[in-house]
Image (cartoon, rainbow over all chains, first blue to last red; front, side):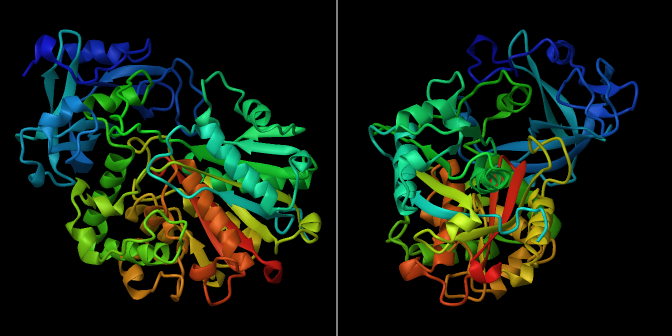
Length: 143
Length: 397
């Protein structure tokens, strides 16, 4: 579903610390960070550990997620906040909790927005929006 | 006496501008300055008396920091102590508590606190939400669809709340209707002339499921300011002092997505500290000024503050009359939903309304019963940081 050079929605602006996430995304691998000292799972990418009893600096390692999880929270957006999303409404904004116990924002797609329910099992599906960026979106789990 | 803030300081001057959809030709500095001048005059002070400033850094014009200094020069007020207060919608309450600590510590005697918000649409529709993606958190949210203000985040809270506790728009709408009744009795409220019904709320369009348009605050231009001084000085001033009896500010997260149960809002810890310091319980509160960016915000704050159990706010608001004449007066000026939200000045207006009720100078929307113990909250981000404060009259000391 690449929209190639016509893609007009906002793209991520990677930093040195987040670039590995987008590099993996381009290869359709969903990654997060885990602290090798305390085990805390971390997302969004950081270079220090936010674990409650941890002072780890440079202790976070990239780990590949199964890409499976569930809908923790969601809304159906009826009002596009950015003109490039105008043709998409209504669309689902969601907080996805991955099975490894970390959360990220995404969209739930390939389903009627009204049918999305909290607790629904979902799996990652890659949206190759530009040659540089593939966005991890989620669809109802097949299994 | 203990060494807490209880009764150490009071709010002795208030000033605010009527929220408007647009204030053509006015920037945030000028709106803040106008509200500040009103507050200084209300207190019976001169600009030369003001020796402490707490201004809202978010409104810095031109960037580069130094907003207190820029505002000081702009107004011709030269303090000997000044800080900012980056607490978003909680800034009104947080500034009052910060100011109380400053005057108690002797860093300043008369602290001017305030914020202003400009909207000059020039006749155009409001611009689209910024699509910036260069921070750690916008990078991982905006590409999936930026939300209009906080609508998307609060809609996710409300939808999860519905799933966990089974509330409905009809139940939430009661909050909008009672607050609108209050606004209909406050000439300063932007919706003063427009009554609404539960049906109006339910039939208003859905902005982000499940939140309907009339459950969401409308951005306004305006300004709000107040003056805090020591209690012993306050007693000799022209208005009945509104004493700061206790307070706190809790942080649970910086963004909604990653940490904790999102239907839990951060005011709980702040409220417990505020009540403990003030030596009152939720049952002693006579007036509530609860930060209302959305209906769901009020419901979760009522629960976490201890006015009802978790998940019961939808029923609680049905069982009580929240109008200024009711058994649980709430947001007596109309709340931000019906008074108007001039950015962080909306949270400040909850503080100035509490002062007005304690002074018994609220006019048509004055609570008829006692107003000696008033509970005020402020809320910043999407359930990121919230502040709680108990204000009281001389009788509550």
